[in-house]
View 1 (cartoon, rainbow, N blue to C red):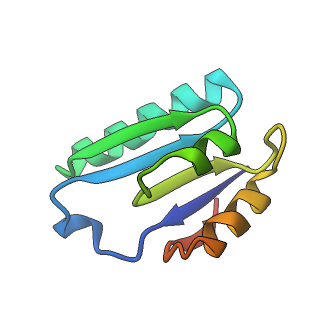
View 2: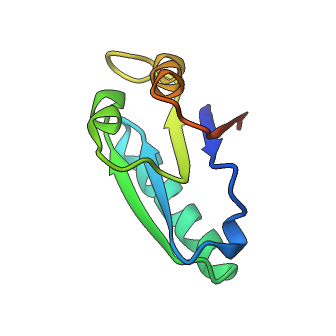
Length: 98
């Protein structure tokens, strides 16, 4: 199971979006990466996809992403705790389970 955070901006009008994938299992990270790449390509959305193997690395990233795909069961802080930290930092992202 994953948490999907989608930035409130209309993705179709953005010239470039940033997608972060936070997943500790390499297979699922690879599959999510492929799915997002195919989705963006099919809609002619230019995307930069960045991967993180744990939530702390995501939190340490300097740039806020437009979309965050996050595993709920991560080593250390779980996905829900990472979402809480993002909200505390003022993230305006929409949270949607998937």
